[in-house]
Length: 416
Image 1 (cartoon, rainbow, N blue to C red):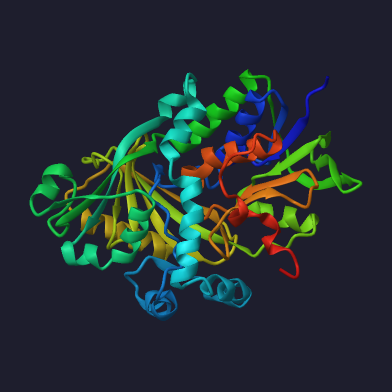
Image 2 (image 1 turned 90 degrees about the horizontal axis):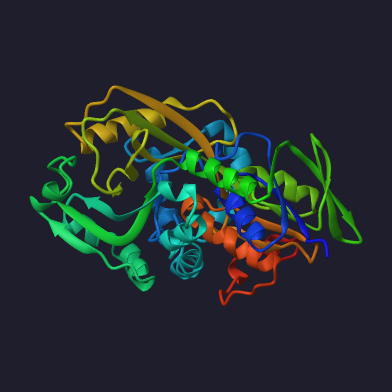
């Protein structure tokens, strides 16, 4: 009996993980990407397997605070004002979730995807060459003092409810644990059972090589359309020709939106322009990944140097970076790591897929055989291994005991 053939669109961490789990289940797999694997949003993240990232940006009070954040040159939120008219419909829906009830509901959903991130990446790579990229660590949140930490009480309450309880380190002990930190950081909230990826691009590329070693196929091609017969997907049209299939998975991040439109689903998804800087040959490195709470950026020692990431800008898909976000990130890095020196630096701009309700789309479109696996906002690397496993389980009908209703892609169908 011929096994089912699944075509997966998008060779980032989600697509690669989905492909590997499907191949392990014995299905024929073709993975597609218009570029090199792992070079989109999967490339430019903060490297952290941030299992405690269960709290959306749209927390209670954001509606009141938002204008002040945008006006503050020291706050890491930027807007390309020429893009605002196009952004407004998405922004209205996005901000409608900035209340306690929705924040708790979204947090519960995010916990499903990221709460066991380290274990999921370890399971994905166990016994393979890709395992070398997955590192276990703690994850620290650096604050100015106890009062600053307590000001984040609601966020930490949600993390505790998800099973993440911090150990608090205060005073001079902070610099003993993390000598890279300057004297203004007087409290660390440390979470165990986290991890990081030494090089996300190389990690994804090794996963794709693993897929090929297992008998799967990678094709560099751009997807043009889907062929449906009787409401069921039967082929994917690409720049390299038509590829026949029994099922398809769309996991191409922000580029998934126009593909969904071809299938009749208008997804309210915007590109969040994310920035990072890698400081090469740094004189200091954090001992474990950390979030600088006052600066709203993360710092991770990876194999290319010290990567600092976290600045957010809304302004569409222009490939041209803005100067102000990178300038602020450099200033914040100097402020929190005052003794840091480095040989050179590498800038990056990429596009994170941000749905209006901060929850990824994971599921099947109307029994069409087309499955979605995109929209992970800030948690793509963290949640990628788990998402791939969940989608593979859906396709192979190996039903999990997770409540997948929060991720149902048809929640965005017309009339809902």
